[in-house]
Image (tube, rainbow, N blue to C red; front, side, top):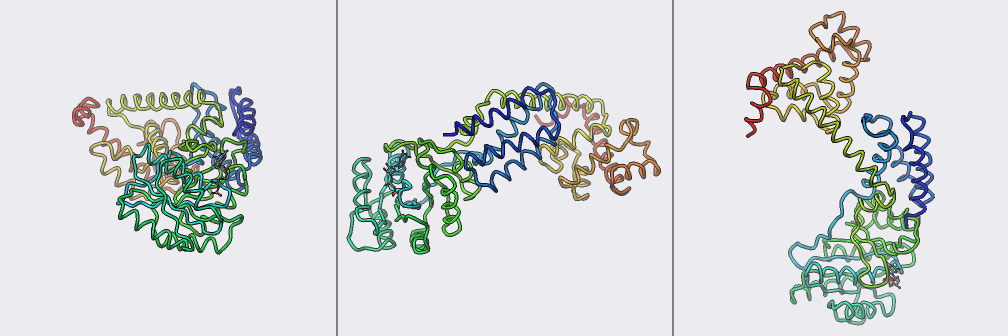
Length: 444
Ligand code: GDP
């Protein structure tokens, strides 16, 4: 279903991949094309915009790895952003609480709600070894309750006996009661649909949800409806506390936009996708696999991952050697700052080393956040080569120059110097303990 999007992106990246170097305008031009490709695939506009902005920012500011081309690195960034957009991890249904666990299915008429209810019930029975009871709350559409009863027979899943004239909330309560008495683990409530979102429907959903406190409220949407699916999802999200979505008809030739937008629009993961009319045509949703299928560049992605690991290893080894000698200059501090930024962590390194508590406190006191890391990097960038190797050279005059050059204050420069001093003292202490080997021993 992602074929045309896949082709479009493939074209963009093929042009980037071959290049030995990329400048900012190359990246921006490529991202404009990515944006158009996403919009053509029916991805919601704000979602496409956010995606492209995030990727651009990362691609422009990234550290260049040695053994891969910048174009390949961009492919990896786009891959990661796609995975994030799709929801990072596959997410299971939460049906392991004190029974009966209620799974409420909501969505428009014709979205595949009843079929999906039966598919999930079948799956929970067979794979999850749960005892499942299904109940249809659809009192509007004649034969809706019978349809579920038929599916129950086909899948060997129990359905709540039909009582004519009963209202949705009462049916739901009866289902819960029956489940408690008969020892069912899971109750699946197939609620009524409508052709369009309307307030009466939403009120009914809220009443059922209040009466049964579901573990899961799953929105079923038809992937073929593209932008409409996104709008439906938005309306439901505003009114009902959804826990996830199920996209049906992913076996059709949908352009994929619904799948790509759903997570961002609902704030909840896609839990399953329907891939056919048969009752076992239901799959778990794996963001990584889907991203891989869209980009079709798994080889490039793993190449870049390996390169990044190698660089980190090289840096760590070089650093370890210096530490063993008790050396720690501004260049090392800079490397550490960059690494901390990558690890997203305040004092990540400091916290891991003994005797670093003071340095860590100094960092915390300086109100260190990501921006501070960037400022510190700028300060070191304004030092001369000699000053970096021997920070003691920095007298008042030099400090003023460095502060001016980096757009920071002399006070900031002093803070950085203090932090460096704390860290280098800690390094010397480590040396006394017998260097890296001593450290290793300490950690067992
Ligand atoms: P409801 O009105 O939302 O309950 O929709 P139904 O469950 O009755 O489904 C409507 C039609 O869509 C039925 O013919 C189903 O067989 C079909 N359907 C449901 N899910 C899928 C799917 O994932 N793929 C395909 N191809 N058809 C589906």
